[in-house]
Length: 221
Image (cartoon, rainbow, N blue to C red):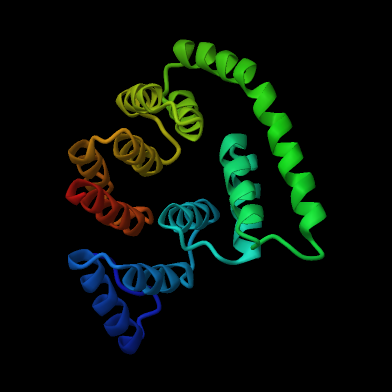
């Protein structure tokens, strides 16, 4: 069952549970919008907030300039300039980032584009470090980078290796990344298995369940 509100308010619980149930069985745009609005209104860690914004972008429901900016900056901070470029280009193309602040968003885009030009050397160096590391954190990091570059086979291999090595800062984050990589490569069953492996009491569990809905949508197409 999808997680309910964290504030303990029975009315919020009831509304959220209803929308989540509808979304799980009938994944329509209006149900996605309501569930995502309720989820993003809750308190989460900075990392989880970023992942909710990324999910909203994936669903096509990122429609606020501040959210576009936060997602692009978060991607840049994580070393994912390709994601930042896609987010900013989409926001500019759709007119969400138009107006008096558009020049600043275009400067952000130019910066992210410059970072993508330098990233191959950084990725190669990180891959060499990951091979020598006893823990799986660097493998998970490089898997996330491959995911941002849409190199899904490489992302899957690196993330699987990272999870196998263990000693990750956030193992459930890596499971989300692995599930998304499987989903984007068309392997919906493996995606669902990865999302299902996220711990029930984890702060990432709500995200995992929503991504499972995305996997079900993909499998039904």
